[in-house]
Image (cartoon, rainbow, N blue to C red; front, side, top):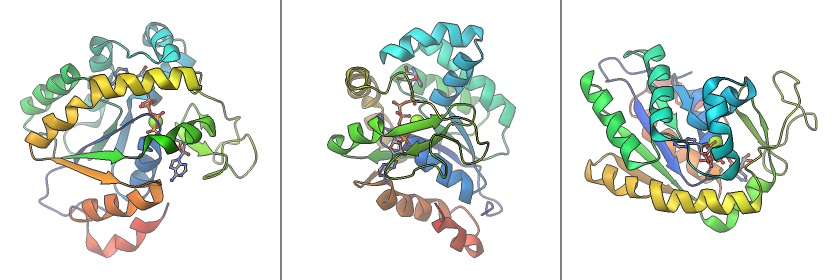
Length: 236
Ligand code: AP5
Ligand code: MG
């Protein structure tokens, strides 16, 4: 596990990419190799739905239909998670912010504690390849672990590798809902790329597979973490 170089400011990283671009997959790899905590908006919402919380009840319909959950609810959810982590720990956000309003609110929150975002990674994966990935995806809801029947199958069919619990299909992983999620992404999330480009913190990484993209992410992060642990960075 690579640790931070002393004197570096804590990592404040966003992963932005279309549905199925591999945000969850890359987050796990980063978390396995670097001392970074992941906050995934989608995973948090799915946990809330599974536990039937007030937030889960409010979010379930939008998620099932591929629409966005309200900015207000999302900000409340993510702020609570950021507060739990505090200012010392490195973190990355997967799936938040995804509207301009969320992005500006996050900036204001981070400004208050003088910890602005320092890196935004855009996962730029061709649309032709992602629908098939989504159709092949199985997830372990409590942990957010993601599998793919061809690319990354579980050791035992239908079961999570770590807990042995059953895997599920996401209710929004069907061609109709996927189309809406993609549209929402183009319309509401892509404008964020320009916003972060102007702040000079955007890096766009392209590749057909996450295996092409991960080494590029590792190289970017290695600059902030101790070089002696670099061998760890290549593990999936
Ligand atoms: P969320 O859960 O964030 O879904 P998403 O953005 O649509 O992204 P996905 O999780 O589908 O894809 P991913 O990029 O994580 O890809 P993955 O690594 O799984 O959000 C769900 C919903 O919650 C939203 O629609 C919205 O309703 C709501 N929501 C969440 N955040 C919100 C916010 N901020 N504001 C408002 N609403 C919000 O990979 C995909 C598949 O590909 C997997 O099967 C994986 O194994 C496979 N794969 C990965 N790499 C490869 C490879 N190299 N080759 C082949 N397959 C691969
Ligand atoms: Mg995901």
